[in-house]
Amino acid sequence: MKKNKTIWIAIAALIILAATFVWNRYHYGKKDEIVVGAIFDLTGSLSYMGQWSLEGAKLAEKDINAAGGIKGKKLRLLIDDAETNPQKATTVFQRFISVEKFPIVIGFNASGEVMAAAPIANREHVVLFSSGGASPTITDAGDYVFRNRLSGAVEASAMADIAFQQLGFRRGMILHISTEYGEGYAEAFRIRFSGLGGEIVSKESFTQDQTDLKSQVEKIKQAQNLDFVYVASFAREGARLLKQAKEIGVSTHWLSSNALEGPELFTIAGDAANGVLLTVEAYDPHSLESSSFNDEYRAAYGRDSEMFAAHAYDAVRIVAKLIEEAGYNGEALKNALYETKDYPGASGRTSFDKNGDVIKAVALKETRDGKFFAIPPEKLTNERK
Image (tube, rainbow, N blue to C red; front, side, top):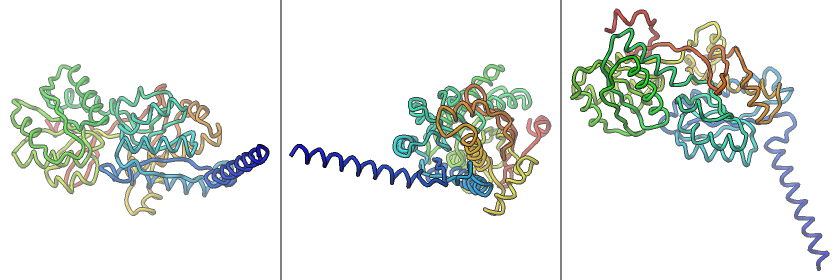
C-alpha cells in the first residue's frame, strides 16, 4: 500500500511537471518568441490615452518583428486593461508578476496606477516602466519604477513661471481632480507660484467622474481680483468644469496641463474650452525625430500620432533593445534603463535620471476652435496679459 502511494505521488509529480512545461511552452516556450506584458487603460475615463498607447505599442511590436525580433525571436505583447482603476491595475500587475513571471511590465496611463503597483514592483524586483504616469510623486516611487513621460513637477512649475513672470499674474486659484495626478500637479504649481511671490487664494478638489461642479465654479465666481484658475484635471472632468463655469458667467484666464488634451474637452465643453493655456511635453509628430513614426502611425490609423502613442512605441522599442543587450531579468533591465542615455525615439531623445524619470523639454499649447495649437512662449506677453 505504501509502495502504491509512492508510485501515485511520483505520477502526480510528473503530471504537474508536464503541465507546467506545457503551460510555459504556451506562454514562453515557443522557442521563437519572447513575451512582454503591457497594461493600458482601454476602458474608463482615460480610455482615449489607453487606445493611443495600445496603437503605439502594437506598431512597435510590428516593427521589431519585421526587423528580426529580439535575437531572432519574435516579440509578443500580452496586453491587459487597467480600466482607469488603480485596484484593477494592481491586480493585473500582480498576475503578470506571479503567474506570467514577467521581469518587466510596460504601461499604466494613470499615475495612481503606477503608485499602487510600485510597492509590488520594488518588493519583487520587477521593473515597472510607465509610458503615461506624470505625477511628481512617481519620482520617489522606488528603484524599479521608470517612466518616459515627463514629470508633472516640471510641467506645473513651468506653468507657474509663465503665469508669474510672463503673464504678470499674482493672484490665482487651483482646482484639481482628487487623484495622484491631480494632487501632484496642483501641489507642484502651488509651491512654485507661491515661491515666486504669487498668492493662491484657494485650492479645491473634485472627484474623478464627478458631473456636478457647480460648487467649485461658484467659488471661482465669488473670488475677488482673481487673475487665473489653474486646473489639474483629465479631459472629461475639465470639460465639465469649463462648461459649467461658462453657464454661470465665470470669466477668467484658464491654465492647465497635458492631461486636458483629449477629444472629450471639445465634445463636452464646446466653445467654453477656447482660450485655455496648457503646458505639455515638447512632442511634435512632424519633427525630424518623430516624422517617420508619425508617417507609419498615420498610415495605420488615419491620423497624426499623440504623445502617448509615441511614448508607448518608445517604451516597447527600448525594452526590446535592452532585453537583447542585457537579458530578460528584472535586475539587469533595471540597471540597463538607468544607463540609457539619448535613445533616439519617436517621442524625442530619451534619457533617465537617478530616479528613473525621463529628461525632456516643456512646450505650450492653446485651445482654439476645437483644436490644440502650439504657441511660442514669446507671444504670451503681448497676446494674453
